[in-house]
Image (cartoon, rainbow, N blue to C red):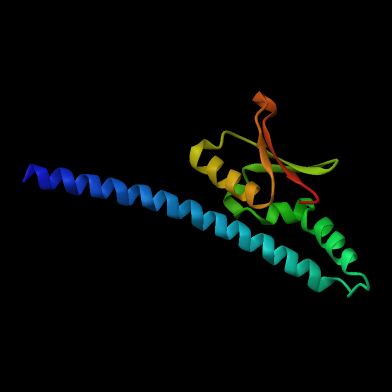
Length: 132
């Protein structure tokens, strides 16, 4: 009996691990969906330009504004972050300690936008390039 119980406990642990992975994938997909919706909304709101290169340039500029980056995060996570335009990137900085789960969700959303995490002690932040 104890062998079966140990086997079931290991199975439960593996299922829990899979749920964590699936939740991260789900968050990545939500982020990707928000980015795509933002791009589609930007394209629909613009007049049709003559040159295809102009379309790409305008879409990238619009897609990477502070508001477009902000939209990539669920409301609960957005409330934990400040957003600021800095030169050629948008800085996303935590307002408070995030914890590992929130940090992972935010990092995933930032990666989905082509960004990265900058570890700099108290000045640590996420960067999302404006023209990714």
